[in-house]
Image 1 (cartoon, one colour):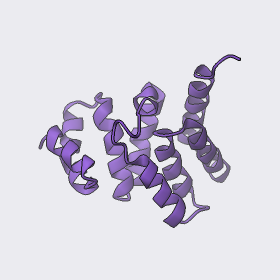
Image 2 (spheres, rainbow, N blue to C red; image 1 turned 180 degrees about the vertical axis):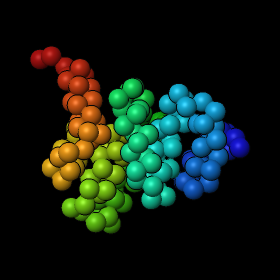
Image 3 (cartoon, rainbow, N blue to C red; image 1 turned 45 degrees about the vertical axis):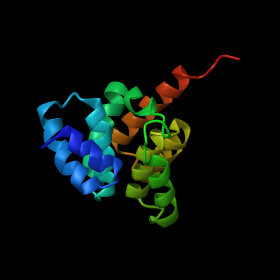
Image 4 (tube, one colour; image 1 turned 180 degrees about the horizontal axis):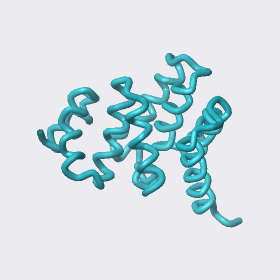
Amino acid sequence: MSEMLGNHYFMARKYPEALLELLPCFYDNPKNNFIKRKLIICYTQVGKINEAFDLFVDLVKGNITAITSIDPAKDDCPCPELVNNIEKFAIPETLDYYVLAGMLWLYCDPGHSLKYFETAERISPESKKIQDVILSIKSFIKSHQTVS
């Protein structure tokens, strides 16, 4: 298993193969946010929303900038394309839809991500994980607003 091969598969948008390669690397180094943020995307693309969300919550609470600092064009981030597909083809009005879109939007636009998570919270108001994500995103947005 190899991080380099996993990155190759990831860049080629072969998410199941990337997941198989990157997961053992993550187990060897669970603090590697670079791998973690790719695993989140891989999990979303193989239908493992809960696994993606668990990693996402951990990363957002611990180091939200590991996601928000990505330049989608420069870093070849697939999220703009993935979000577009979700918004066109996924079934709206489900919790998974809003959580999935919220996770992917954070890579591109924290404000859009927040809107999706706020809708998810209306569907599942008892979810501590969703509440934690909302607080983290709001804190990030507030700390990055420019003073006029």
